[in-house]
Image 1 (cartoon, one colour):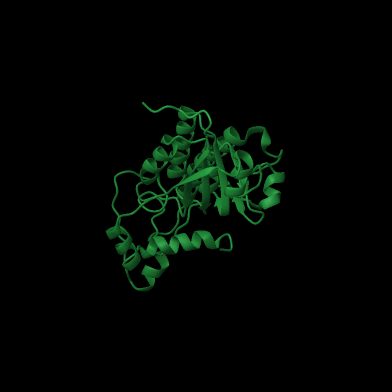
Image 2 (tube, rainbow, N blue to C red):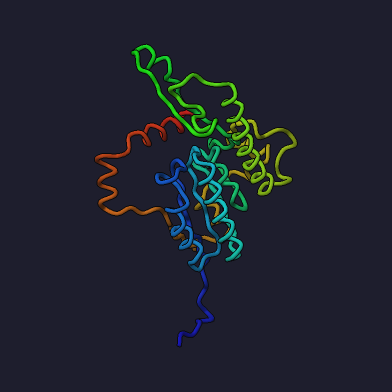
Length: 261
């Protein structure tokens, strides 16, 4: 039987979860790979969970799933969650940040980009130049929507816009639910981005703060930190380093490049 020492001072503990990179199913940040990380972070005896975020965004579905898991664990365990933005928390990255109870940034951090984007290429003229004929047979009028090897159709674009608006509304609902009356009384959902102090003024974040000094001030100098992150096997790390998914790497770099990084 272990007796509690009445003269021993109990130190506060903070679980730090690092969320770095693009949000994407199968690669980068996704609900499947983060589930065990978040479960462990909340399962340990802890006084708070800190999300250290550096993400340009990505999949809206994975952003929603990860954010929902964070909120579910926070409410079940009754543990407060704080987000700390490093370089960028944009689009899906900001979705994750808004899943915390409070958001803190560096004066030069970029946040926002509350919008939805769809990109692609039109290759119909290229294949026509080389005498290549595209043959498509479908059952269902919309099955070949936005085929990059066929001329773009106005009805396909309109249909895509409706889909994007639906996803955008879900994003806005999440931000309204999490930030509520903190938000400035103007349209913040145009895809605009903010830096540091301006993000505070418009209610996107709560203040300037870095994770270690923030919690030392909050819980005292003796606060303890446990760091959690996605782990890969030796074989996985080796294969990623040597052979890597080039398309994913290019896409991730392009996503960061939108914010000058």
